[in-house]
Amino acid sequence: MERYLPILIFGLVAAGFLFVTLLAARLLRHGSVESTNLDPYECGNEPESLAHDHRFSVRYYLLAVLFVIFDVETVFLYPWAVSLDRLAWFGFIEMMIFLGILVVGYIYVWRRGALNWA
Amino acid sequence: MPGLLQWLDEFAGPTLFEFAVSPTLKILALLFLFVLPLISYIVLAERKILGYIQARVGPNRVGPWGLLQPIADVVKLLLKEDVIPVRAVRWAFVLAPCLVVAPAFVIFSVIPFGPPSTGEGAPNWFITDVNTGLLLVIALATIGVYGLIIGGWASNNKFSLMGGLRSAAQMISYEVPQGFSVVVPILLAGTLSLVGIVQAQEGHQLFGLLPRWFVFHPTGIFAFFVYMVAGIAESNRNPFDLPEAETELVAGFHTEYSGMRFALFFLGEYANMIVVSAIAVTLFFGGWLPPFDFLGMAFLPMGLGGVLWFVTKLFAFLFVYIWFRGTFPRYRFDQLMDLGWKWLIPMALILVVLTALLKLLFPS
Image (tube, rainbow over all chains, first blue to last red; front, side):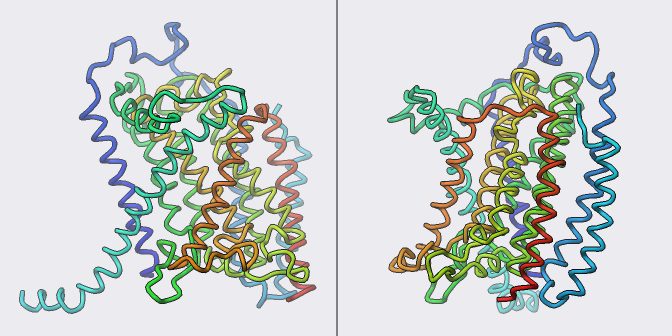
């Protein structure tokens, strides 16, 4: 476990770096900001509504769900890839069955048009 | 109390130095003597190279050949006013840039810049080597997505929201083929440790004419292609810089950011660029290994020859990044999604299966 300690230390160093830079910026910059500058930027027009009043395309949710499915698959692939030497053909066939199920889902999703953006 | 002091003196003293002080010093040296100067000067190199590609000179006013430009930029960014829009979600707005920078930095702790210690006072040319190295890299790289989407949403600005959503969609779409493509070097090396993956690429093939780097493996070269395309998309660079497509989205997720907070997003983007390049060098181009042994610069002390090779390869990749920016037009969003989901994912899946088959049929 002690090999992971430097990673933790690096995290702390990174946090310290962020704290120091933002603190330096706060101390050095000139303070006041004009009030019109604090409106949401809309190329000079006065905003009539806020971004949070609007909904956005449902496709982004669909994409997120698809991502979760595929990314979990990749996580299963890593330990398999490391130990393929020992698993040999048994492990290979097992993984092919696993990937086969994934590919069936992938073809289904493709044919239902979930991968078409436009 | 005397017992504690004695314990500190006898046990915790050397252990504390070995496990806490020494890595901290190495980390500070890596961050402030390598990563941050490198980022500042890549920005200058990018502006210079883009300038020459477009038949202009690039920055040349601050210092000789514009060499002091990065310092001037940092001073300017530190002094700029800090705009936090009134309607923004304040805590999330402040948190977002930190979420981009911190994970990108932490990844550097597992990247092997040079060979492990061979004794004779030579140091390990990496902060640490863990047996889950590559998984850690992928996991940390993903955290950056949160920074972009939180920044885009917290600004409460329509351009930012669209940019944030787009970048999140893009990054998670390309993370899948990237995750699949790195399975190929894992299969070939049989380990997740980055040092182990480089060591597995030692030696030569084809009567000593070709190094045994994974990019010269029949499936490795295609895996490298998938990794590189996905990596460029992951770091939001041309031709996949849609999140900040200025003609349609002003500046995307960081439209409302200014001063040092903007600089942190910028820093994160370039740190990610270095990480993607360094991982490409490690997984496919033999890390610190020279292409041929006689080019190994073994006369340099403390394994510095290896470090020199790693840095040379790293710079070559960074140049390619800049070159792409000067060459390719931007993708359209639906084309981007098609490329990721309909081309790279099936390609990467086939490569994984082929590599496993090759490995089992021809165990070497």
